Length: 326
Image (tube, rainbow, N blue to C red; front, side):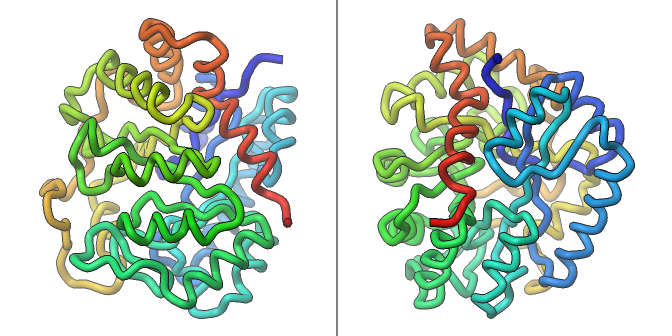
């Protein structure tokens, strides 16, 4: 069987047309964001919507919860949908909801979005105080049940402490190296070295604010960055997390960045000042275009096995090792 194709982060405005594009692009699994700032109850309403989609389109998509579901997707010509949170808001202040969320099918949870949470510090905050007392206990509980710690939007100290405290490898599902592009959300070499040395995974983002050159970033430049990251950190720790927001209206950006806590958008020092979604690069507009990245990586001189891993094999291994209880 061929190596799987996995995109480990999307927040598209999902619809039948996007599910059809997933199949046209041969995408075997997608980790979708089902919560930013939602409460537990609001998150459950999002799960209800996904259940309706699974019922309406069983020939295209199904709910994934284990690494075996990636193979099942390949065997049946469908896309497995895995759920994740970009903020710990759905667990509110109740550590018992960590296990409940895992039982509901959640497989990734960021300890912060851009701002301070009850668990850790986001990358937009001036002072990074690291994991809180609750944060350390929640990481321990996430390790126990098989809910992956995601530090994509977290500040450096908090991320390093999460890597150190976690007894299982963690993930940065969607970000790029800061040495390639100095966006506030991109990750330092220190963080990426610690992440990969501990067995963790980095998913490369295609969101233009995270790309060198923004929307004008070339396929060659993006793939050269991945090749350099493979040299520095090992190709086995790398994958894709496109952060694709296909068909979302610009108004959604305000919800993502503000939620309910603020009346103004706090962009963070040095971050993009554009309140809408930027145009995607011309070589990646959606789920049909992953083949361009595969071709670009091979042209950078990466061998087929490493390219297969980056395109999805590495995430598949990580799913298999991470989604069950200890």
